[in-house]
Image 1 (tube, rainbow, N blue to C red):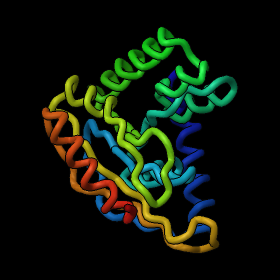
Image 2 (cartoon, rainbow, N blue to C red):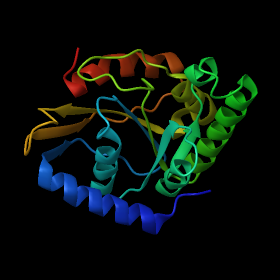
Image 3 (cartoon, helix red, strand yellow):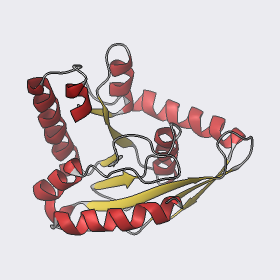
Amino acid sequence: MTRVDAFYDLSIRTVDTALGSLYRIKCEGSIPKGPCIIHAKHQHWLDTPLLGIFAHRFRRRAYYVMRKFVFPINRLADWYGGIPIARGRDVRNGQYTRAEHGQTNNCAIQKSVSLLKRGALIISHPEGTRAYRMMGLLRTGFAEQMVKEMGKTVAHVPVGIEYENPQKFRTNILIRAAGPVYTSKTEELEHILYRALPILSNCK
């Protein structure tokens, strides 16, 4: 399955209007044109729609690296531009076999490379799970694989979302992007993400 652009555009416009009525959303920084990966700090369940709104402000549709879901959520994720991956914990929990884990992630890498070669924008959460106002352990396997496959042809953009209080009406949400990084060195990207994401999100 591939993203359904009409569904995606309608979803983003609807979410933008809805969240814009609930919060004061501000954006800093920008998204470059061409192939790009946003590496976003994962704070809250609102992160995914907010990042879609952020991309929409720059007239860009996004694809999302996300954990593999079961039917019917997987179909909605496909329409929204989901790139399913299987996490190590999913194998440990017995949700997938090691073979299924490897096959799913190999497909995710192949699809991501194909999309980037066509100039796509991909959003990834290197922590792999939510950690509100604190940094979780970065799992940079996807980012490292993209660097190895694409080198300096892809812009890597660290992004943080700072929430004043997501439980309260009309509080501030700041989506903040750093400048793009073009690198062929996985260690350099990992170092930048470890330094930039806590600052951009204003968390520990």
